[in-house]
Length: 117
Image 1 (tube, rainbow, N blue to C red):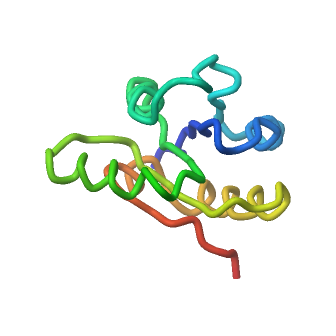
Image 2 (spheres, rainbow, N blue to C red):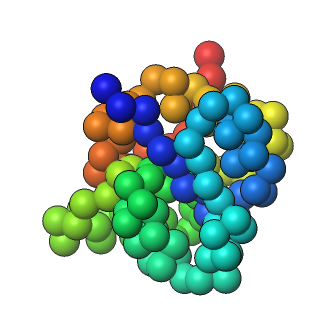
Protein backbone atom coordinates (compact mmCIF):
# COMPACT_ATOMS: atom_id res chain seq x y z
CA UNK A 1 0.00 0.00 0.00
CA UNK A 2 1.18 3.49 -0.83
CA UNK A 3 2.20 5.86 1.93
CA UNK A 4 -0.01 8.89 2.27
CA UNK A 5 1.26 12.28 1.15
CA UNK A 6 0.25 15.21 3.34
CA UNK A 7 -0.65 18.87 2.92
CA UNK A 8 -0.46 20.95 6.13
CA UNK A 9 -2.66 24.03 6.09
CA UNK A 10 -1.81 27.48 7.39
CA UNK A 11 -3.18 26.84 10.89
CA UNK A 12 -0.13 24.69 11.60
CA UNK A 13 3.48 25.84 11.67
CA UNK A 14 5.52 24.90 8.61
CA UNK A 15 8.13 23.55 11.07
CA UNK A 16 5.94 20.44 11.21
CA UNK A 17 6.28 19.88 7.46
CA UNK A 18 10.05 20.39 7.63
CA UNK A 19 10.42 17.94 10.53
CA UNK A 20 8.30 15.31 8.81
CA UNK A 21 10.24 15.69 5.56
CA UNK A 22 13.50 15.27 7.48
CA UNK A 23 12.08 11.94 8.67
CA UNK A 24 11.35 10.86 5.09
CA UNK A 25 7.66 11.79 4.82
CA UNK A 26 6.17 13.46 1.73
CA UNK A 27 4.74 16.64 3.29
CA UNK A 28 4.24 20.23 2.13
CA UNK A 29 2.68 23.20 3.91
CA UNK A 30 0.50 26.10 2.86
CA UNK A 31 3.32 28.41 3.88
CA UNK A 32 5.64 26.75 1.36
CA UNK A 33 3.14 26.75 -1.50
CA UNK A 34 2.14 30.38 -1.01
CA UNK A 35 -1.48 29.40 -0.33
CA UNK A 36 -1.48 30.55 3.30
CA UNK A 37 -3.93 33.39 2.67
CA UNK A 38 -6.29 31.45 0.40
CA UNK A 39 -9.73 30.14 1.37
CA UNK A 40 -10.25 26.79 3.07
CA UNK A 41 -11.81 25.40 -0.10
CA UNK A 42 -8.87 26.63 -2.24
CA UNK A 43 -6.40 24.94 0.06
CA UNK A 44 -8.36 21.68 0.09
CA UNK A 45 -8.72 21.83 -3.69
CA UNK A 46 -4.93 22.18 -3.99
CA UNK A 47 -4.37 19.19 -1.71
CA UNK A 48 -6.79 17.14 -3.82
CA UNK A 49 -5.08 18.16 -7.06
CA UNK A 50 -1.76 17.09 -5.55
CA UNK A 51 -3.14 13.77 -4.24
CA UNK A 52 -2.50 14.72 -0.61
CA UNK A 53 -4.37 14.18 2.63
CA UNK A 54 -5.21 17.49 4.29
CA UNK A 55 -4.16 18.29 7.88
CA UNK A 56 -5.67 21.26 9.68
CA UNK A 57 -6.38 22.67 13.12
CA UNK A 58 -9.38 24.51 11.73
CA UNK A 59 -11.94 22.61 13.81
CA UNK A 60 -14.56 25.28 13.15
CA UNK A 61 -14.83 24.89 9.37
CA UNK A 62 -13.45 21.54 8.24
CA UNK A 63 -15.99 19.16 9.78
CA UNK A 64 -18.64 21.03 7.78
CA UNK A 65 -16.49 21.06 4.62
CA UNK A 66 -15.79 17.33 4.94
CA UNK A 67 -19.51 16.64 5.41
CA UNK A 68 -20.35 18.71 2.33
CA UNK A 69 -17.80 16.73 0.28
CA UNK A 70 -19.38 13.51 1.53
CA UNK A 71 -22.99 14.53 0.78
CA UNK A 72 -22.06 15.86 -2.66
CA UNK A 73 -20.06 12.73 -3.49
CA UNK A 74 -16.83 14.69 -3.96
CA UNK A 75 -13.68 12.70 -3.36
CA UNK A 76 -10.56 13.75 -1.46
CA UNK A 77 -7.44 12.09 -0.09
CA UNK A 78 -8.38 12.42 3.57
CA UNK A 79 -9.20 15.33 5.86
CA UNK A 80 -7.46 15.15 9.23
CA UNK A 81 -8.38 17.63 11.97
CA UNK A 82 -6.55 18.31 15.23
CA UNK A 83 -6.63 20.69 18.11
CA UNK A 84 -3.67 23.07 18.28
CA UNK A 85 -0.82 21.13 19.87
CA UNK A 86 2.80 21.82 20.70
CA UNK A 87 5.09 20.79 17.86
CA UNK A 88 6.48 17.63 19.49
CA UNK A 89 3.02 16.22 20.23
CA UNK A 90 1.74 17.09 16.77
CA UNK A 91 4.81 15.42 15.26
CA UNK A 92 4.20 12.21 17.27
CA UNK A 93 0.56 12.06 16.23
CA UNK A 94 1.20 12.74 12.56
CA UNK A 95 4.05 10.20 12.44
CA UNK A 96 1.69 7.62 13.89
CA UNK A 97 -0.97 8.53 11.33
CA UNK A 98 1.43 8.28 8.39
CA UNK A 99 2.94 5.04 9.69
CA UNK A 100 -0.42 3.34 10.26
CA UNK A 101 -2.77 4.65 7.57
CA UNK A 102 -2.07 4.13 3.88
CA UNK A 103 -3.09 6.59 1.18
CA UNK A 104 -5.89 4.20 0.20
CA UNK A 105 -7.20 3.95 3.77
CA UNK A 106 -7.30 7.75 4.18
CA UNK A 107 -9.11 8.37 0.90
CA UNK A 108 -12.47 10.11 1.55
CA UNK A 109 -12.06 9.74 5.32
CA UNK A 110 -12.63 12.50 7.89
CA UNK A 111 -10.39 11.74 10.86
CA UNK A 112 -9.66 13.39 14.20
CA UNK A 113 -5.94 13.22 15.04
CA UNK A 114 -5.88 11.45 18.40
CA UNK A 115 -3.19 10.88 21.04
CA UNK A 116 -0.73 8.07 20.45
CA UNK A 117 -0.93 5.30 23.06
